[in-house]
Length: 193
Image (cartoon, rainbow, N blue to C red; front, side, top):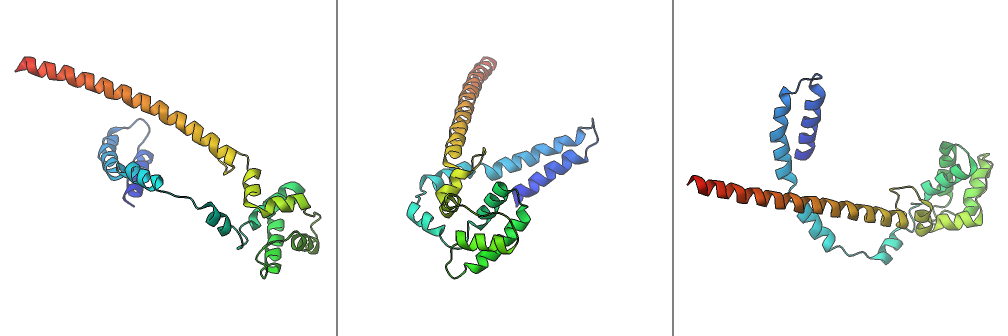
């Protein structure tokens, strides 16, 4: 909450200043320092958390079964493939979910029957239903940048790794320059003594 409060203060400060007036900007420095002190331990905590993280793929896959997690994907896919309004398809999928509560899984038969009952002219094919029935198929269908598709995630990791390496080079260069300046300053101080 402290970090959020500082952010709000900084944004309000910038918004409240008239164009060309920067006198109040001096008050952003203490806020920035408070913010830095508050978050400086975050990388260490995250390194510890992610370093000890163990993924149980079997349990994760099991957790995706039941609960109709894929219902919105059914609606989205049907809407995109058919050109029908998402709102109408989503309402029909909601009815199909109600019909499938006992089994805990959406079925192609139930979805198609509900679409027909609602006067929506589209039927889900067997290949589409198979893709929608498996979490892996749902992920593979997401191909936009930033999506959870494994290939897109790998691209993001590689991109971020390159960015991290670039920043590491800049930091090493800055540390070297700071060290050099500190040596020069030390020599100047010795001359004065």
